[in-house]
Image (cartoon, rainbow, N blue to C red; front, side, top):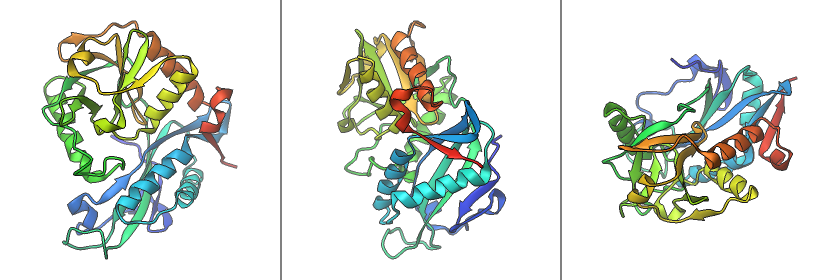
Length: 304
């Protein structure tokens, strides 16, 4: 059961969440012709009348870029102002998640992106831990990650998430928490909605963009923070067998944050996770505006 924030942005105005509804004939509903973003926010622990958003500018930039795949010109600064106003209208009192969504809003049956209306809405919900902070079990999915030559994987295109949905349900129904998808070359790509990292011999390793992974903002944050801590980071292909024998492994994403992997298939990982824990603690401090080194990553919105 979700606790949705009371106000949504819909058709260029703020309305009660319950009134923000689309028609069953909406183009995007039938063809997956939409793109979305997602970001976390929380009341400032030092000043509860301020709301903190993590890397707001990057999220707005990525959504604007995703909209371009929909042939929709939606500038980042417009997205940012709507999100700021959205937060002020809702004044959330606990940790929350914002879902902005661009989509083909026309009512029609022809799959296309030209000569079709587009729109943009925003809603939010209270959100604590998306995955267990103690760690998750994962299976290798029988479904493979799509290729960029058939789908623009640099955007968060809604239609692409049918694969994620199939993989997640397959994992849960077979007794695991999460799925790990391989790409068409049989290399590790990502989880159902998160990027993946492994640690071997003190080095942090993650599949590069040539492995059909999403340009994750939390992924970028982990890499930047790791390098600031003196941890060597390598972006390269990762074999399934290498994943099985990693010293540590974790998932990263806006909802998942940094979530340790405790098991992949029948391969157990140690509960001693020095690099994972160090990165998670550092990112937590940054998102709570307690780290002066990365204060420019946190956007503070006054509610008064």
